[in-house]
Length: 639
Image (cartoon, rainbow, N blue to C red; front, top):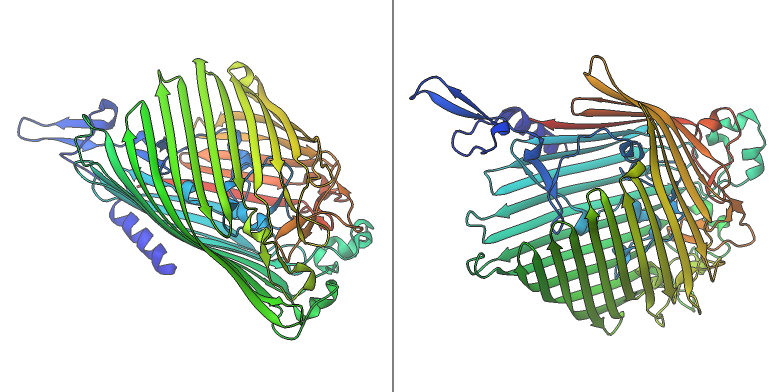
């Protein structure tokens, strides 16, 4: 990987400035004309931020975001660079979260993706493709727990007008405060976008290799020592944990190529053919330490104590696209080869064995987009496929956005999905007896989601409502076995947010009320989640910088939480050892600053734990991190 960084910095130094005498922009704000006479005049290209853009393949083109707004303190103070409202983080960065809000996740459809490994996972529709006038480098840095750091570096460059490539590497290594809690995550990404001069041929491609590796400490063995106030245990390494030599690993590797061709004059006949080829392989490992066998009731230790599950997907899609500025229709067929396997299991006779499910699927895909008057936007997609092993798959997503008056909008959504449960529920082979299962008689899990959001200019307010109905809801019982609910799980979510300002002082609040109308015991979750951000924002140093400083408070109501299972990387229903968590506010104090294109995010996290007993938990026996100083840096370099 060091050679990639050498290439990045070499390319950056060689192309610190680009002067183009013929292919210049026509915008006066972007072009400086220096005229020294009729025969000695030239145009020097001076790019603006509008010349640095990115997009996902099916998303809109966006400008690099260099704004300094309050929302960013929720993103770049987090190791996954996302606003994690509705989640509670484990004590070490890179170790995942517990979801406090029920959210359907399409990334887990027909693939192996454990719930606690997906928070750092990039799906194909999250990959960014760039268009920049000069070479561009971005750095995102986060401090770690005890020893280590997290750094994401992205380098992108256009070669001519029609070809762009990007190289990205993210590396995270954090020791953690507890014994056996090291996190080591990384990804390597290469992406490229090409369009021919006549714009009839276009290609998007990427390769990504992602790893989410964690030492698993299994939680604290004796909570009395944690809560007892003995100063010896302020050093969390002195607390005894349940697992001392076990670890879990997840790896995902994807090759992706999408190409489209317009055979006719697009102004007269706006049709094109699109072909998408994708291969993805996911692997999940759990290695049980020899000294940790006693933690599990029944372990067959005749040989290797490790287990492995894997899935492979090869997908081929051919579509015919009608591509008009206001109306876009995409319809095609898709063929898939799917494999799900697991190794090192236990048969009834006590011998180790493996199992593999494999099938070929055929289906259809379609998408409709309508944009009218810059106020009405409809995006509707559907996908259907069928196979003998994993059954029927149906997914329909429909979103309507309407902006009747500027800065006021209404958004409605209707989503439906019927699919096999995530592959981690279907098959598992393990030397741990309780974690062996083969749910070949599964039923399709059907999810109906109805929701809407209203945005108002006043106080930057938003209000939302979401209704979820899940039939044959899949879950893990208290022994770690997959089950499906006999009756529907119905969840109602109502929430909103607003910002109140007075001069340079601002108060932003966000809240969510969530209620499970039926089967509350199968989906334990808090009824209320909220946070508040009180901050001061002002120019500083004679307008050479901007500063933002404030106080953040997050809270969720008390509830009987699910337990975390390291062997599954999933959350299971609480058994006799379970207990309620929540009801404790978490307070962060922060100071942010922006200087040109560099932004600093300095945050004292879980402030109350610096002078009070830490009583906040991510899951039973897994305390939230103690007070720590977190430093985040975002730096965009436009060479």
